[in-house]
Amino acid sequence: MKCPPILASEQERLQALSEYGLSHDRPLPSLDPVVRIAVRMFGMPVAVVNMIGHDHVFFAACSGLDGAEVDMSRDASFCAHTIAQDGVMVVSDAVQDERFHDNPLVTGTSGLRFYAGVPLLSPEGLALGALCIIDSQPHHDFSAEDRTRLRELARMAADRLELRRVEISTEQAKRSFEDFARHSPTAVVWFDEQGSIVAWNDAAASLYGYGVADGAGRSVLKLVVEPDRPMVQDLIARAVAAGSVDGMSIPRGMTGLRSDGSEFQLGLSLFCWRDKGRLTFNAHLQDMTAQRREAEERHRLASTDVLTG
Image 1 (spheres, one colour):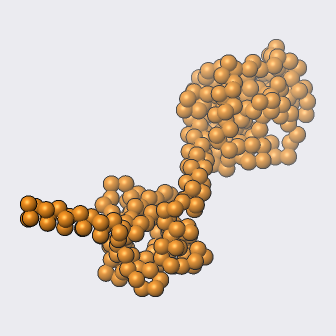
Image 2 (tube, helix red, strand yellow; image 1 turned 45 degrees about the vertical axis):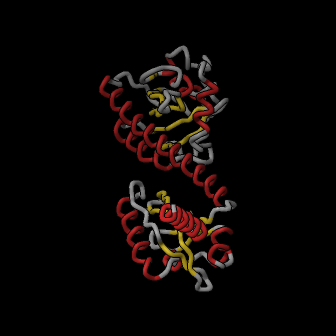
Image 3 (cartoon, one colour; image 1 turned 180 degrees about the vertical axis):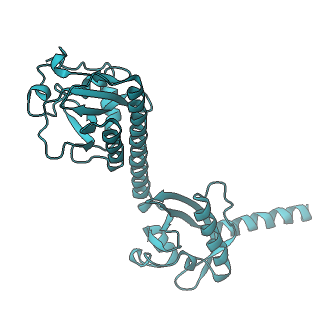
């Protein structure tokens, strides 16, 4: 048996693979339609998306191997050979191929005879794994058109893998940001599309005179005086319609309302992200009363100097 080569970019490849959050017990459901389409399109009993780890292979998606015992070592993997080359790798009859004729996937219970696979590349061109179709019968009629169709399916699979990486990266960034915000001296409030507060940090609770546990379920509109509430409601509605707050004008000069009924000049910065198809808002709040008074005093003094010479 000829073992697959180790790529010169192996360390970079493994690092890239780790960014997709996949493992043998964490497949990617969005790839299931791809392997099902491959089975139907080519009339093959098995289609798999294999990810190639350091010394083992694991399924990101699979159709046709339910409950089957499969050697998942990298040395035995056909897909580990596929990622070392460009384009489609086709093995018409593994029994007649010197690389694979004594491979345990060929001689064992799997009885693999036909294989066709395409590398799945990261945006940087690193081969993460392969989409492949398999049969226990040889096929000598896998055409150029078949190769093209398999490459097209592989591009679909690679796109879905990349979406997974973006989701993982976004989730990690969001968690890091939220961890920072929860302990930030800046008042931070999280709320949903309906304006219902999901949570706030200690600084926000203190700013408004509540306990931390009092925030969840409260309307974000109650954080400003009644005349300003239509502005906040309109801002949320526009952000939901646009799917973003980018480029939106944030109202200034609003007045915050504390639990004891006292008021203060409110400074607001607003961010949002999409989570499970819905927007979650993140508002940074600041009591601007002192700053406004200082600015007014500086303006008054400057005016006095001009008038008095």
